[in-house]
Length: 381
Image 1 (cartoon, rainbow, N blue to C red):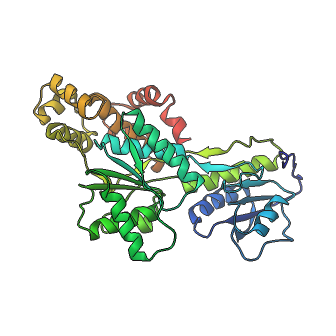
Image 2 (spheres, rainbow, N blue to C red):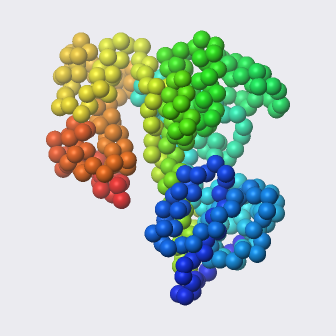
Image 3 (cartoon, helix red, strand yellow):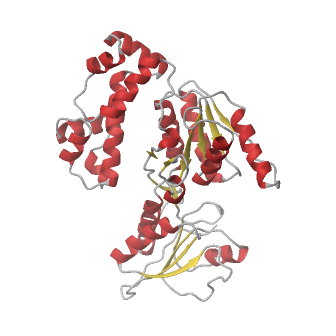
């Protein structure tokens, strides 16, 4: 087994020379690495992890890579005499520190998104097996099971076959299950295929089939006929934090070989899943009102009035159909939007509080502490 790094860089090594070897499509990861490298004053040499020409002869101080590709490329990483940080886990036998996406969180966030909208029929859709899809499926299925429900998993398609045969397979997999159906796809590419097949076969999205992908890749998500909801796996953050991990290695710190995880940023909601699949029409009306007016000073009595129910009747109906109270749904929506604003904007805490229905920054901080065990400022840091 490759020993933990004890490499200590020379004080005179200015600037540090870093080899970046990522996949051709990992441009957001690359941007994260570049952000850190600029602040640190690194000099970057860029290749790809799946290059035809292996960079034998390169000399430098550290490597950040998505370790994979040819056997010769893997041998190059394994033989490196400098610290290597791996942003992949397809070669677990190599004893590298790793920075990975939090695939368990990705699965849970997708399940919570669907369940918050009242879905009771779930399908995890993937087209080929992989270690990270297994993690996502496990978390998705577990979260659904904890609510007393079951998530199905599409069998992998048979190898080979034409494009039309593959589309027919997708249609058959989706139509095996009752509607409305929540389909969680292993990536945005698979999700786009599901949406296309459903539209071609006359299935309504999101009314009959709601779809969520993974990656939040804008060229796919924003350009489909029905824009795609997707879990933002924080690829930029993986690159930036992976570079920070490499810096610690080069400073001689001995790091755990248990993979480090970059936080997922949650579901970016678009048209493909923006629906409330609640059979009770008054509960659906109340949930829709909460999502449209969470920033206003609304309370439970107001929500009950909009729904046309008594406070007690509203509480009972929410527990029966959503397995939570109206108050907990209002808090969940407000805090979810608060987390998004903290991570994606430069708004002050006072501004975020006013945008999410809280009377002050102090009220927002108290709600965050109770819900997540930490302050909004810590999340932003």
